[in-house]
Image (cartoon, rainbow, N blue to C red; front, side, top):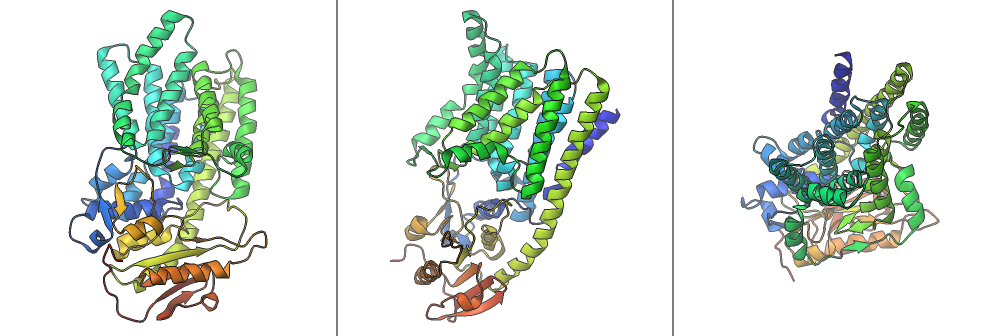
Length: 505
């Protein structure tokens, strides 16, 4: 009973980082909140109907969107999105514990070592639909290992479960197929086994039907690799699997998990790894290595898989033969998880106080207007800490019903699209960035001035510029500084706002 109480406590702890912080530190979350606000209120005749269109259809990227639409019957977009996202980490933790129980007949210490990876790099980026789908995929995989589909009823249930995982995100369904396929592979001893495995796996392939319907209508590029430091990037997918909280604690925790895993393996005794979980983990890790950086519009498709592979390899380690050693590893893993939860919660709380102060700049943005955002970089290094600084202005959509240029554009996966052809071609995610002059590490003043002019010419009534002081901004004709707080500057037109009309020439 005491062990189950501890496990319930650990799952409950996984809720805290999101629930305790009004602005969680997930990098992409403000954009998801903005999309949910637009999607729920579309067609109501509000001001955002001038800027955005929503075309609902069944695609493999609706994981958090659907529950948020339900919750928004009673809650605003920010609260509803936080509530839905808060379940991702606990569901992942529950899947880890369930897989351990199914594989080893008990919750092993190796499951505790895997728990800190609940808050992995892809989660910290805020890939919420994907992360929810992976949690669901691991839960379905645990059920598959416990009772694979041998009857018509079982096949139907797993087919429906696969459709649920696919609807959450295509990536989670791909994970489910690979891990189930690898688990079946270790059982194959002859042709008869191959036929039996194929029969059991067939229900999981049902989402191929909606996938072909969805992607057949998409004209976006299917695959692309990163053009810089490809091999180094693949290595960092695993070395930086916990990236996002703080560089040295993340790396130290990754190293500690690695050392404890080796110790657990050395202490396991007898059968040292569950072959099904080990094969599944190695299969996902290999897929991460060969996977292109961008797949069907989803960036980071390769490094998103690395945490899943590591989790499964850790879970494959059998309990130590000596109970004392097992308890020691169990406690060490649980402590690492608690440290990660508390550390992330505390850092998000500190950052959230600053973010809320910065968001007060939105009070000066006219409702229903067009607000441009420019993130000015002066550092040539890739940041380790992942935070919503660059996507924060997306909250102008739910808070001021205004248009901004930080929203995602993923060909074939856009339920929400920008109405104006000019905006759709130019003013979307990444248009906010003015990169530094490298290797000098200086602000690119010429690029900044050009971006400000372009936004002024494209009828942005206000422009939020982050990263430089007000005296380093060349104001376009007719604009003035409306507010300046440190490196957050809001400039705007002196003339009264007129609603923007889509399709302008």
